[in-house]
Image (cartoon, rainbow, N blue to C red; front, top):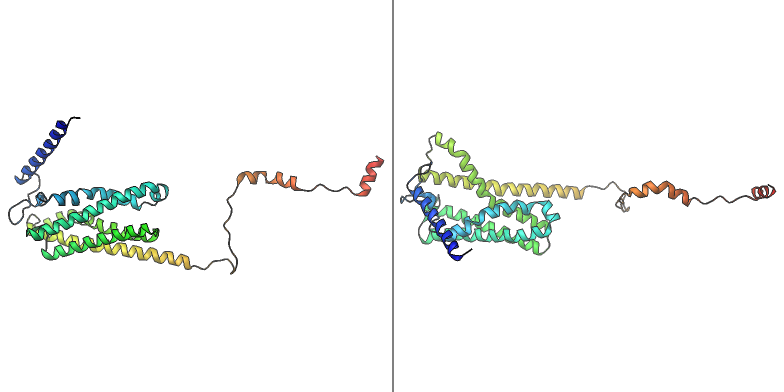
Length: 278
């Protein structure tokens, strides 16, 4: 492949992106174009923020795919190397996502573009808190793994995944409720209304995700503690040994081995004399 071909390919991709942007601005898609207060299309809010697009949006699908793989007990037990390698990629994506979200917040403050958020400054505070929890849970999970604390690593990574997946839950809530709200008279084509509902769904989704995982961890920890505290049926002072695995060949040869182990009968003197007379 020649260098010129690669350049032509990149140029073609950029031209297609510009064409889609132009179509969106002209309102040539099926949905009505939602615009910011200054008239710019809401869907193009990240166009001038390359760090947000490359660090926050691009790694998100990879992170979402790797999370279930990391939590799979089968892969952890049978493919340890895959778990370690994908874990490094997973945490790299987590780092990039956190950096991208920080860049969005900084650009919003420096460039006075708080229209990215629904409730202005307080929405920025909420997202910053979720981003901090996202970073903290990931860092604690990595620290527990380096200390070979498998249980602690699993607990903190569950919290990390729950914190990240709240975004997907929020998007799902927005999509599922959009039709009902529009029929009820709540016009989501108005920028202010759409952002307000977007913010409400974010708060509800975050509360559900964080609370649900903590309840799950509390229930599973209590169940494990109950099993460990359960009294044993064996008498005190008696060490219960694990049953040895069953060997089917030994069971089949058992009767023959028992016959070979049986000692031969010692002849009595009278039987020996009788045998001599014969």
